[in-house]
Length: 219
Image (cartoon, rainbow, N blue to C red; front, top):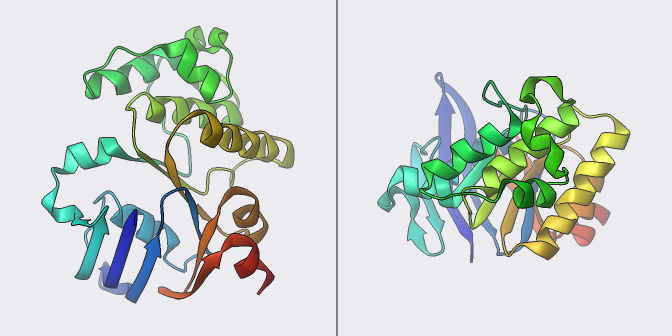
């Protein structure tokens, strides 16, 4: 099992966010689906220790995440946030920066290609490309760390229908080209069905259902 969350309780600024949440996420592509404010993104951040629970345990491949070096864990389990947050400068600079954090020399053009951008984007100003292109640049930057798991927080929420379709196509191709597991957060059950094999439905801070994506969406 990729991740196991057992009896997770989490508060933020004194307000409860998760209430005794228990769920499992297998290898491959999993999705956390539910309405806005249900706690999906908080669950995602537990997986690479951007937050720690007040109570309960999070296991990654059978081991408590709190037993791992936090920076090592975050390079192996890499979060791509909801909104692009690129460094000033070129797209290539962003990719090389991430690779240096992991002590690697990246093949920038190859990483951009996997993320759905051609090599010419390496020299383009990251602030002057579209939001959809920035999202792909964020993906390329994450892949430069050579992670084993990608955590994707609403990767298409800021995009129009055309750009959303393009990102979904890129993610589908990524699974075929790179041996990597994905955990995706979305409020859209149809997107969960398109992009994942296993889905966990979260409502009001609790996991209320789980199963194969088509089965759960149909229910």
